[in-house]
Image (cartoon, rainbow, N blue to C red; front, side, top):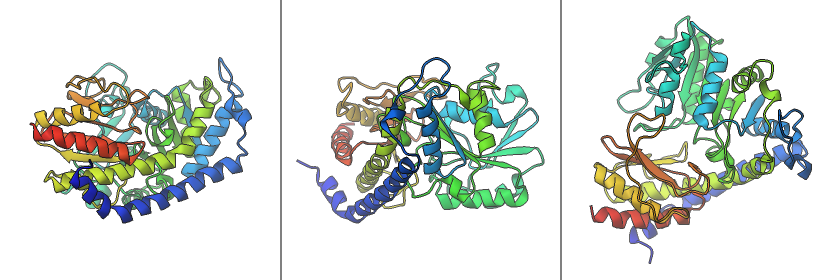
Amino acid sequence: MTHPLITQALAALTPTFHEIDLLVKENLDRVLTAFRHHRLGSHHFSSVSGYGHGDLGRDLVDQILADILGTEAALVRVQFVSGTHAIAAALFGVLRPGDELLSVVGSPYDTLEEVIGLRGQGQGSLRDFGITYRQVELTTSGTPDWVAIAQALQPETKLVTIQRSCGYSWRPSLSLEDMGKIIGLVKQQNPNIICFVDNCYGELTATQEPSAVGADLMAGSLIKNLGGTIVTAGGYVAGRQDLVEAAACRLTAPGIGSEGGATFDQNRLLLQGLFLAPQMVGEALKGNYLTGYVFDQLGYPVNPGPLAPRCDVIQAIQLGSPEKLIAFCRALQKISPVGSYLDPIPAPMPGYESELVMAGGTFIDGSTSEFSADGPLRAPYVVFCQGGTHWTHVALGLEAAISALELV
């Protein structure tokens, strides 16, 4: 029997679910338009071995994603091991010793701290190569500090980074309007500064991407939104042609750039994943709304609010204790299709400062386009729910989580 709170939430969210269906339709149309424009055929599913020279399918995937994202160029490669890797390639490709990297939305996501050089040493971080870093803190309400951003730019500032999603922080994720306002402030003072967007979790949650509001470069993971839950690995960089090629030269080598990188017969999955991506993002958004509404009714602080517009596929819940965080993740693990018999326990994770507890019984290891939840074991003990192939799976997870929390 469906939990009464979920029944109530579904009734209240009916208009929102309808709006999401319309979003899915519009985004699917732009995917199909790109496929049609580039004359996608079954012959593009094959790939080559070795160096990857002349991989027609790989090159077509690049062109199609550039069209979908509204950019001059895109680099889609299974050799990117994560979104962090794609972001790192973009940053190392563009920045040079003496340049400054400026974050205008506070602290970066945990896994980027060692890339920048805020933690760790001697592993070839940006700081090790003489690239400096500053950040503009958010306001107390978690929104961009417009005055501080306008005052923060220096002659040595080469690249401004904008993290679209909240990551592991308790703040609103950024809308396209907010990103456009940031980019406008930056370009007004110095049009040569590169505006980079960490686009993880945000793709296809609107009818446009950050390029439409002036972003020069962006990057993300293919086991998140754009992989449609079936792409087995990889990431992308997209934006201005010269900047994308600079990132390609960091992934491979100068002189090779985007011309190398075999796709290991993954072209069909990459393309089919793009076809499925609008629908999968839509289901994840429905699951987010459902989760936010139910836990708001239970009295837990939620971010975004239960009816607030979504800018990514993450729903955060402030649970308030380590016991509740662990109980929540264990409940979700039990309704996962893979590894339902496992009990998540807090553990260190490469690239993260705090121990994490993670529920992720996904078909693709680490996939956050499939339904998963995790959180760092630190106050105020927030769980971050991500993805979801269908909202009904999320509803089953919520029922299990509600029952588990009643016992804590």
